[in-house]
Length: 212
Length: 210
Image 1 (cartoon, each protein chain N blue to C red):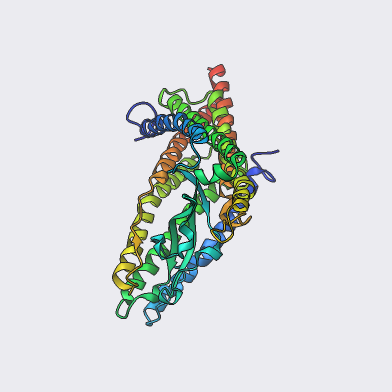
Image 2 (spheres, each protein chain N blue to C red):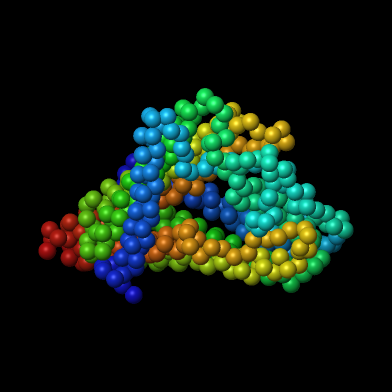
């Protein structure tokens, strides 16, 4: 399955990403509405949604450690209930909702660019300047993933930890600055490099068209 | 900021990939040594096996209620266990695990080698080399293979844990889930490989025209 057009890899990819795009659009409309509804509803009522947080290593000691020799707990994540958050810090709730909406927007925008790139490929319009810009935008969004995670850990989780009683839970704040925490930055730079190669290809194609 | 050539973004990525490649090669060599040791009756596994445990074994304070409002509750717990837990007579299980881990590491080394070769071509400002497209295709297939490989590895780990480990009665394990994201990433890389192929063709045509 080489080439572009129908029944190609690009077409299958386009179909999957298109489905992803429509689902993202539904989520993109629903979640901000749910977050706004959550803000105005009674904070005493039970909420099924919350913020996922990683828990500190000190919290993840097993009940009867002597029974679980050779088992190491690597990570535990928990969920802080929205009702609790609204009762204690509505400003934090708003800040988190805004942050979440920005991340959601970036994600949907990235999917939109990928969808358009694949659509152009399926229509055999590969070497156009718009596609170069689309790949560059995608690279920029991928590079932003890690810094956004750092912001989430250092500001939002830290504030949640401050309003949570110490005897209840301890949230793991901060990410190690080595290891896989740089994966998305490297991946983004790699996509950026591909965009540069693509730009060169586009220039060559335009030159060739003029020559012919 | 230069993107291609020496002292560019590409050379920085190449350095990071080289570093990762060297690290994985060292671990792979250790694994090959361990496979040889298996023949002499020495069963050692370097990397712990993953297992998802139900959070019920955690202290109760992690699901605490105050004034009718739930503060925090645990929803997932990723743990790992060492195959030393296996009961007697399961040396073959350890051998299989070492072999699978070595295969996984081998695939990573091969994928990184292909990526290194592409980056080297970009560093010498030869992005439209004909082998780049083939290498990208290989990387795409390897990335797509991650999904079934990881799922199979996690299932095997889960199966060995439930079959060979004498676990306390209150410990509940969760079966692994299928993650399709790598298949989609692989497909996107395949599309990029096709773009590379067409760009290489244009490059050849341009050279002939000149």
